[in-house]
Length: 93
Image (cartoon, rainbow, N blue to C red; front, top):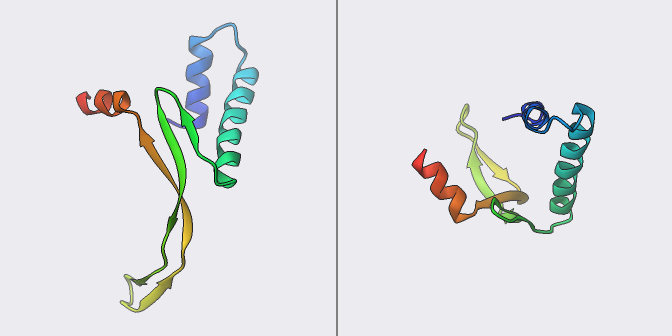
């Protein structure tokens, strides 16, 4: 689901909200999540899951085209862990 599909879904299911207000809310929520993760903080949404920032250690990789060794630097990554109810409902799918 894309951001615009999410906004359309919410507008369809909440007719008293305008598309513009819904888009502003979705953008604000996603922006808050991004800013907290950029600051290295954890974001937890009850009933959905949690987002954390982890470190990936530097390593030596290979260029798939040439086979040459390439140094891959350390970097921060976002990790998501779904709550048990979400994992179970997706597993039943």
